[in-house]
Length: 317
Figure (cartoon, rainbow, N blue to C red):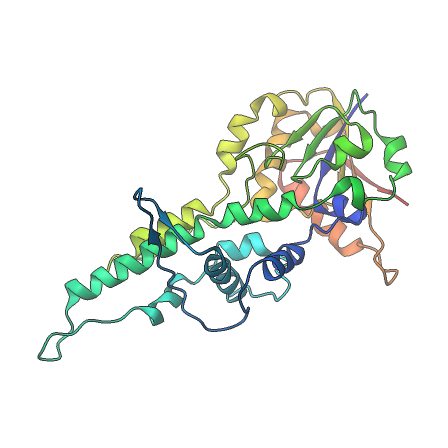
């Protein structure tokens, strides 16, 4: 009997690690010098070095990232759904910082105005392409060995560290450090590996053509911040093809967000799910309420992804 464990951020939170997106927000606001929730310019101009490279002031870059995420249509002051927000950024907010150019007769000069738009949106693209860098800084700052004071013994007794498979959406080494688990796939990368962190939205929409062709830059930004799920699946085909002996699936701290359902679909398409039991974790919050409604939603998502087996629950007391 081989089990598959699908591990989400709730697993790290269960171990009292500061891995909520609000902790990322706090990290930025505590480690960089800027005032959040202000209406400063979103146009950050780069400075050219003697070797020709263009650099941007990191405090200003973080301020722009913070401002755009915090002003999305899906606004949440705690950034609880930050990845979705990345797909809803309102790039046009920078237009307030761009000067229109007029000729002597007071007629708008489209060519020179267009140049200003091109410069502003080009800088905005470079600024937002630095987002993964700051995300990695935050993830790398989380100290597991000195922060976690306990192991979950129910989880430790449930797993077979040498035989079971682990699909984790976390960037941390919690499974490795605390439980010595071996067969782990970090589907979105791991912080200890250079350039492996993947974070982003799942919005396929593109931006309509702008008057000054600013959509050329905004669509490039939008694509850069999008999670390349199909590429990720292709690169992890060995994992998905190794699931044929799975008889039980456990999901822990995983919220089944829309952008990540493609991975569940691939799990279900690679195994005969009719004889498999999927165990959903019962979570009790600080007020004594369990996640009954969330489990019902998760079950619906799993069925829609092609799962035809049974469901059960388990609790990590």
